[in-house]
Amino acid sequence: MNILVIGSGAREHAITAALHRSEQQPKIFCYGTTINPGIKQMTHHYRVGNIKDVDAVVKMAKEWQVSLAIIGPEAPLEKGLADAFWLASIPVIGPKQKLAQIETSKSYARDLMRKYHIKGLPHYRTFNSLAGIAEYLKELGQDGYVVKANGLMSGKGVKVAGDHLHSFEEAMAYCREILEHGQTLVIEEKLIGQEFSLMSFCDGEHIIPMPIVQDHKRAFVDDKGPNTGGMGSYSDANHSLPFLTESDVTQAKKINEEVFRALSAELFDKYIGVLYGSFIVTRKGVYVIEFNARFGDPEALNVLTILESDFVELCQSMVTGNLSTENVKFAPLATVCKYAVPNGYPDAPVTDMPIDISAVKNKAQLYLSSVNAIDGQIYATGARTAAYVGVADSISAAEEIAEREISGIGGPLFHRDDIGTDKLIRKRVDEMRRLRAT
Ligand code: AMP
Ligand code: GLY
Image (tube, rainbow, N blue to C red; front, side, top):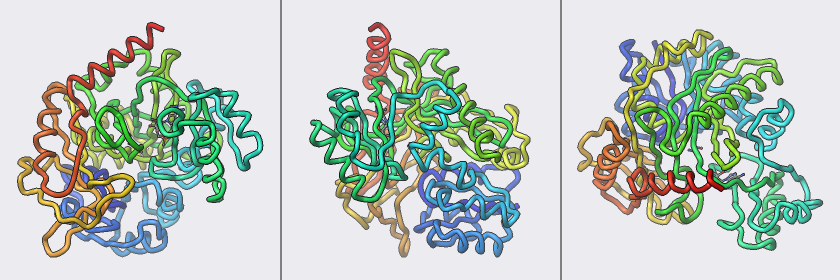
């Protein structure tokens, strides 16, 4: 069986590795933006090109006679790559363009939740001009709002009052900036609590959740600094997180499922792929931060590393509408993922710097990301460079492994050494306990 993976980051490296482990021994092909040597060594053919060029990608897929495609990142989904694959009779993991609006338009996602009365919706309003913005910011109150550019921004288009916006004037300036770029924006109530990610496999009819993961969006230790694509993440052996109650987990699963069904009802089409709910548990319960129409990065690294089911079979069950809990088994183990990123990331990263991974002992759990391989040398290209996933019985033991291995990568890189540590987990649990008591 010929399977095509679109994208060449760490998420796609983890997807490729999961396919590679399959007893079905598929021939794997990759269409990526640079040469990721981790992916390349597992693939039959590897093409570098523009993954948003729908025609070029589908043409290549036909030439390679692929019978299944997996779309990693969101940008090709926005361009309608999934639609083009289905038109070419190539089954694909990743929703069609209209369904992917659940990620590509923040206002679409919020409006859908409102229309279908789905719980977990914060107060929000969408704006396409300055009219009414000042009044709404004042209504939400000082430090009570979040401003979001209404498009794909790689997790960097959101500014939170108190953290990134320090005054009413700064908030107005950011709104003006977004509008001047020709985008609309969403302003919403700022929610206080702990964030978590719940991804689900979807086959158009059925939706099955994966283990819950907590990402760390902020660049620096102690959740300081700008938002990034995600600096690292952890999951627990029980597939929940230490600060969540059973009821929180049930609520999040229910919201994912209701959104999945609302999308089908609204668009008369089947959502096939991964639906990723980004949630925040507050003292008033679980709220939605946003939805993504694909695997999370780094979250995919946590879950795919401990996936026990055959990933090829799982993907086949998704595109044929036969997904069941039988296809979706994860090992009862904890994972901690840490990303090494270039110095200066995310605002002014150093680029095209050589890195050395020779000291990393177990390379099976090292996932390369924004790198390029030229004449046997790996270069960090500027975005997140490489991630390591430690796996163990406890978060604490997984953290030790991840910390040791990620520190072994040579080059002008840094990582967050606090992700997954007992200290940070205890802080999260204490914060949540205090919040629930108020
Ligand atoms: P997003 O790109 O929508 O995932 O937002 C990036 C980050 O901004 C999230 O991970 C949160 O930390 C923060 N954020 C987004 N929306 C809200 C909200 N309504 N309240 C508090 N924080 C938010
Ligand atoms: N972990 C954040 C994302 O994949 O968007």
